[in-house]
Length: 391
Image (cartoon, rainbow, N blue to C red):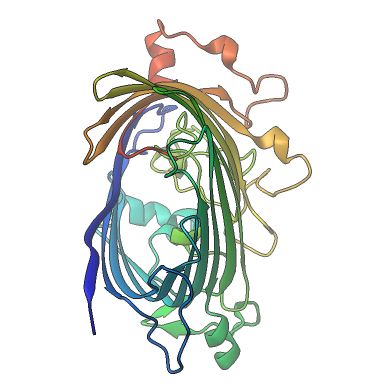
């Protein structure tokens, strides 16, 4: 049997953000992750699966780790284990089926101040709970972006993520009826989640490209869970999303954590949702040597599915409804990328164009833009340092 170690140490990414504090003192964070994968070049199954085509199927076993540090708040350690199969139909179509997809999240270094505030705020408390998910997942990817001679290329990634379905069936778990079940002293999560990520690239010239992305995702918790686990919920903002807003500080919907210094929201922010829509467009231009420039516009938001069934979600304007277009965040910015072949360093500076939590008629804030005003810059400019392109 031939074994290969594919991506034995895969750095999954890192980013840092600063600025745009809106008078909120502790919303900075940093994160990084790594994973190792062992690949066996065949299907390992109790029965024989005939191989088609020229591509070798793989049975893969993966262990991963993610680290998230929220300044003056907490640290999350996330451990993931996958076991499943990967195969290609052709050069463009790829499938990944994980029979086992397990994730355990454990908080450490929770500050005393955060703990005290979380006692009276369910949103903060949810972020520092132990979380355990176990289920299966399927991913389909189509891409022709490697065909560099094409003027127009596309990418699509669809994911179906299931957790706790078999456990829920076997145990009869139902949190609404007071029958919640636990594994490793943590309630196992039960949900279904579907993501769709579509990208379109237009090569305008040898040194210029127009990149576009649409993301749509929805998750629904049931049985043993009232809501999606914190690490599986959607958020907006950050270096790979709507870059004019800090990660997890806005939404869901038209809701915004108040700026009142007497509220816990001034201390930290962990705004998440069950539905996410996001649109990104970016014009990329090679400047000189390995330095590239970019100008971009991002839009989107997150929403809750059912606020009434979730006592932790008392957030006005957070539900998804037919008025969702009025809830969209919009931001713009520009950046530099340094393509060093083995790594791409990215620096983005962004600012908001639309804030949906503001009163009707004041949501577009384009007229407020004033780069010469230090107060405006402090409240609105967000600077990101990241590895790799956002999409």
